[in-house]
Image 1 (cartoon, helix red, strand yellow):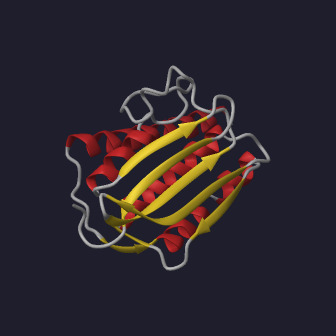
Image 2: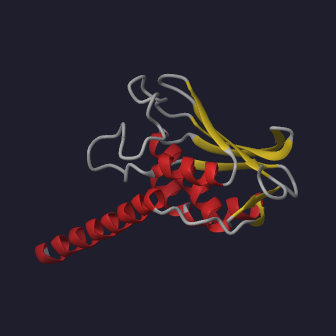
Amino acid sequence: VERRRALATIGGQAYRIRDMIGDLMLFADSPAPQPQLVPIAEAAQDIAASMAEKLQAAGCSLELDIEKNQEVWADRRQFESVLGCLLQNSLDASRPGTPVVLTSRAAFRAGAPAARICVTDCGRGIDESVRAHPCDPLYSGRQAGRGLVFGLSKCWRIVTNHGGTISFASIPGGETTFEVLWPSAGRPA
């Protein structure tokens, strides 16, 4: 029994290392996006289904509020990675019994059509010491050993590679919202 537990721990850590190396490679040699029009609601529902167990274990719910027929110009896998990272980040910060909310509305960025995608949690807020670093690679405001320290920096890299922007607003001890403006038609400027 003890040996099985040790092997399971080793296996889990090996997967963490694999994921960290993959995320680090995103910065060293970022893959070029293969963009297409991606339905936001469909991608969000796929991510929600993949996170169902995590949401249940955390005692949180996920609310999707996405305008009909909204699409983004994106590499689908990379877009889903951004949604997954933002949702996981919010879930990690959330208190049990609170919702994580993903909204998407039509917007404009630099005169071009875009989608304003927001992920909001009712968690702890972003600490003052972390506010200057949320998208810095290898920086984490979490306790050592928690998270891979690449989630938000990976989001930033993917979003900017697609011609979008990412920002946040946070109330200390309360709600945090990450907002992504993502091009929704044609090639980004």
